[in-house]
Length: 455
Image (cartoon, rainbow, N blue to C red):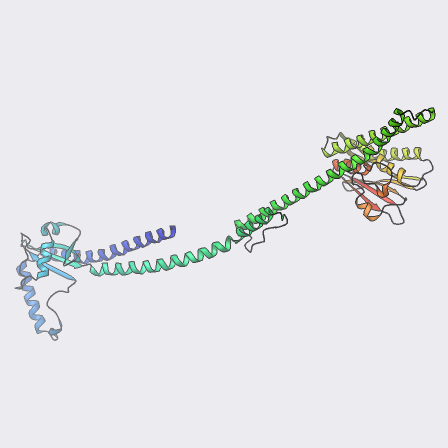
């Protein structure tokens, strides 16, 4: 619609310009003829004499029969008197068209004084007319036809209308094709959104061949958003599954000591523990199970704090000193175990000291509980670029490949071993809170190496 309006305006301006050009040309011819007559200072009698002489010379000249005595039909002139009536010129009576011209001009004298020709109509044909005053007061009215101007303008209008219609139709087709081609990715987005609404979160909007268009930018942004939505949904599902598993495992771990405590209390209530040694053994088992539940609850609380990203008390901490302390504790608990320490000097990291002590305590505790008492253990510290790595390696039975993948899961115990299964989960939580990473590697020849990398 906007282009059509622009074409109409452009055609109108061009047609008006063409019309004014042609009319100005006719006006210049009429004005030039009028000025020539006015400057000649001739009277009507002199003009008649000149006309008679011209007719005589025309008759004597060869080929005179091929020439007409009347002016061309596109040009008309008539002499009028003071009352505006057409009069004879060179003995010739005015024709009907000359009388019509004299009648079409309201005031020939005023027209002679005007600078611009005026529009008149003769037999429904448009003319431009002007006038000149002779020395004897006679007024000569001159008129030129403008019919060819209007005819040509009508032809140009028809041509412009036809050409504009074709151009608009062609443009409409090309616009529809181009718009459909450019907006095709939007249809793909609708299909993708519908598929995602039906539950297929893996669907993505296919790529376009026009990477610089706004639609392609929208496709990239939408695919990025969909990837985040899928990741968030998967994370939520995984978290929900982990929560269910966590609740089930925690319930199982707490049910065992509670069942044992309840059993001993029922025996005591029924009077079945009469012997002093039986009562002592029962109270000892009850206290043991209570301690077990206390440790389990403490570990669960610590994991909960780590999940909530509790604020760490960061300060410069000597990792080598912590490793030497952990090795000393292990030697005190198991003097017969070979312990090798490679942590000489001082190596500082910005970390929470109590958290790192618990990491080392859990790693060394796993070695103490899950490996033979004579299995060698090696604790080492090394620095590479901006990372400090603590390694706790043993020569125990090691882990199966499928167990090594799940060793950091909560309540996971390889082979149903002792412990709550939360030690390495706490290790990973503390290391993650420090912005580090912890990995497990099976050693060739048997054994396991746990590597803690801290920034």
